[in-house]
Length: 428
Image (cartoon, rainbow, N blue to C red):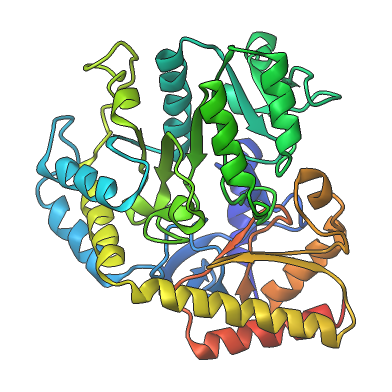
């Protein structure tokens, strides 16, 4: 495949955009080579600037559950645009969206629309602090909640050690209010609570992690966190920006049967448009301005175009439970096929999988947290990534990102993905 146009665009972009990209993972730094610039997409395929076609397994990092350019969503956006792009004022669709989200997500009694998942998590933490009158939060190593200062914190040398800034520009003061624990470790969480009694406002996590690769909660782990937060008076926040409406109509909280106090959403509720939301118990959400004292605002929040796209997407998911049956079947077929290939090739790499999310880790160590994820051979993953790309399969350009499947994948697509896996895995 020729990618001359992408290479030229990347060279030009580096003159005007830091690193040549507007989000770091796009730069291909962790896999080597230069990024591919995408021109268009339809169904299960994306096309680059040189019109090369790829079957894609990222789906804009999750929201394209129904594949790219799903016609009803396209039509809804086309109709909404006729009435102008933005009002900065209330609209009917905001009310309809809020009502629909509340009907689908178990934990949400009231919801506020924002413009991104990052904005949703930042606001949720602020509201939890305002509601509890406490300042500290707990997050987990390897869980990513956007680029808010509170979330860019690495772990200290022990479970009760204060965090240290993980990015220049994050102050020590912010770091001191962020406590970190290993994912899937209840004892570490209880130790943090004991060492910071009555000081922790919120605990936030991805119920299924997507940002160190796909990592599932151990049996009883989410319920254990629920129990600790209830006992300690801590607001439990599920970051379902990736898992919301993907793992079930009601997200991971429905699938695993554990209800948080607050939930953050994004991606899917805009049908691919820039959007986010946070919601939860009414008594917590009533702290948000103008009803309460916790300030949060946004001119583009509830943008009419994003609401039109998101409403169409969510109505389709709500009205067609067969979507989830198909996603489960596709996930099982692809992951089952890769497992068979690994067995055939006598390779003991790890695959984590739930529903329409999965990751292949180039390690023989079961991946249950960030430390075990980091045992992966990232150089080997880079070879795998480029091998798959050469065969027309577009994967996430990082070992530490989950893959997301769509209903647009046909049996022929699945067969092609599996054939490419066997060919590439047999060579690296």
